[in-house]
Image (cartoon, rainbow, N blue to C red; front, side):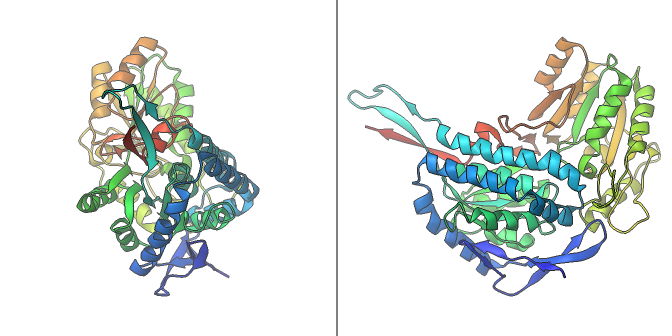
Length: 472
């Protein structure tokens, strides 16, 4: 029987006030596997009221108390690993082994990192800038935070948002993506054993739910991981209420592959990252820029690696990646490929797979030009383009020649060349001879149309604070 989720508001599970629900579709089968509330203004009002009521107490708790709560939550996530695997795979179709070994440990680590950082919020004291008076700085929580997470990494993005906000003393209302709410609801229910009612609230719903939440007068800060369109809409709405905004938006990561690399090894390493999670990753290496001397050999090697990958449902052993998350995203990816100009060549893949669900073959496209739509726009699927470059200057020009600026990587044995690229690339993250690795201690954020603010790290924690000058 299909499960019916409920919102988690003020420490209690509640259906939408209207009684409306949304169907949850298993992307591996295309069949309905559950229902979630379609929350409206009454539900966001209740959640924000609960968060505002809890803020008065939670914001004055000691950092040690917040640390204990988050450490207990991390232990609880580990203890309920099977339940989180089931929730996540039902909504996303991911291979359960990958989620269990690759994502869940990182999620737990993030919560534990911010538990520790709760006790390390920086402050500063200074001498008497005015005679007889001493100045100091306090880092204080912002208030009620509205947080919106995407469907590509539902639980991980929830942890990236919730943990720093709570560690800093804020209270939160989280709206998960409409297609993937199950793990966030489970997280909130389990967190109720460790957090006072109202500190963490989850409301399920659609875009209208998100609009009602972000426009709510009790909300002081809006944090979103999502599309550029969503970020622009939210930033505009936030401006009307002078709310603080934290945006992690799209990506279209370039990869600079120089002529001194091991072609076969580099192709294998990049293919393993590019198609992880069906390419639904804002930092995925989607644009491979390859030195013209090794372009043909590298293209052949990379296409061969892509052709070896298997895509299948969660219960299929050996699947390298699962389906796209929803029918709309599958149609969007296929439409981009169908609109390819005549000069572009699909080297391998290029179409959805003839099976139930939203599966698409790993695809490599060559012969593209910089102004092609598939180069300029984020595909967010298992599609990689390959372009040649003549020299370092052209590589950097092609890499930065899109509106996104989240991540990039450089592959070379030349240390000086790598350092020049890390300084020149206009992105928030640059990897050298690796791609896609994130650690809790380092910030994750972009520039240009990829947003502003950082997840993870001390920078991510500080985004959920405000500075107060105190003079004694």
